[in-house]
Length: 320
Length: 276
Ligand SMILES: Nc1ncnc2c1ncn2[C@@H]1O[C@H](COP(=O)(O)OP(=O)(O)OP(=O)(O)O)[C@@H](O)[C@H]1O
Ligand SMILES: [Mg+2]
Image 1 (cartoon, rainbow over the protein chains, first blue to last red):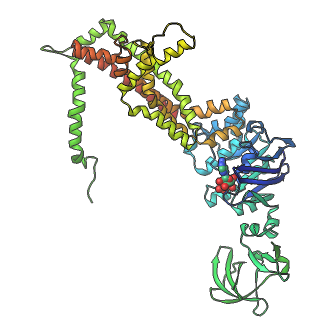
Image 2 (spheres, rainbow over the protein chains, first blue to last red; image 1 turned 180 degrees about the vertical axis):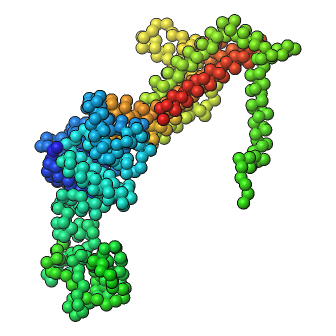
């Protein structure tokens, strides 16, 4: 178990910077999510931390030790790849035994550790299968068991749930969170699913074009985005004009319907039913549009209907 | 609805099938059957007994297997690192390398084999280089002995090993190797525990192909062996074209076929066990 510190980490491919002056500090046992669009450098960053790649400049510390030039096998990091990368010629059990064998742990001891890890991810009974005989979710859990069985100092997860359907993904998110808490291992998760980032992590780091946009707790990043990119990337953002001429962002949940005459008049363009919530796309007078999300209480406004909406000025967060 | 059975469409392939059987399979069966017939007397095992009694035949068979094995091992020793090296090249480099490996296919095997005479002969490139460098005083004889035959066969058959091996190697996902590294494995372990096992089926298939092709090779042993390295195919040539003793040739062919099938069966067993 260790903390991670990145100082000005940069990775260039030619003149293109896949990671550009990234600073990050993850404390012992913390769960941090790296969030960003495709190609923003998330995998690059993980591979630098894992030691599969060397930064062009900057330093990487793990547990206070400078590992910038250490090889992958010197770092004791558990890594789950975007593609799982299970060894196809080995059984589930052999896959999980692999990192133990490398560490010269064998016999009954290794067997016990491997079976414990498989039990942890609820895969006991499938030890003798090959990866090709498993479902996507099961493969993902084998990869997870293989990455934690040797008690790594750090767990790096690269979109581990990306290939799964929504329901399975939600189930595994809960499992992942529990597992991380049980093991107390410092964890960095990469995803481009903002819901996943918000629900799982202690803090999130938003990345764009290799640059850090914001590092903050989920609620803070959501309600107080550092800039326009973060505001738009995390959920739906309504941009409104502030009296001082700046722009501000209001989240849809903060937009309320009011009695006629009290708020700003608007016309319902679209009403989307989302189960517990209804999302309204509204056209304000003056060619501005706003999205409101309100609890569904039996009746809803129909498209074309005239309504009034308002929001507290405290709920507007200024962005540049 | 029409009832479809496996026999539907048989009419379409029947002419081709007849052609295959008549032009290809029947002669083989006839050829193999020849060994069991004696003119005027009918069925006999005499020719097989003849095989067992004349040790020269079995010696040639053993000799052939040994040369084939050495040529196959040489192929593996050269071909595996070559294919591995090709995998590490960029797109362009790979294309050029594959072209260079395949190129000899376009040159007649006869031409290639004669080229070895130029290279390996007493006044050839290799010997001149050896003498010039002072490693030897007198020319080393590479030709008209087993060494020359083995070198020639290994060269001619190399693409049969390298191409399937290379295809299997480029199919190995780099991320598997990275995963092994991230799990703490040093390069040696990554190679032996992950990379090599994943190339093993292709290596086995390629080596088997080379070995079986070696068993029946004619041109190269005939030219580079100069008649002094007896291999099965040359023996058959003598028995059919010069003596001629077709029945004996047929018996030897049958034996060769059985040996080949046995090796193939052994390979299938191992392969099935490995992928089970
Ligand atoms: N070996 C490489 N050579 C050149 N460019 C590369 C290399 N690896 C990555 N890149 C580039 O670096 C950028 C970041 O890639 P990276 O794989 O880190 O993105 P990502 O955030 O993980 O994206 P995704 O969500 O699609 O997985 C991309 O523009 C990619 O094209
Ligand atoms: Mg990625």
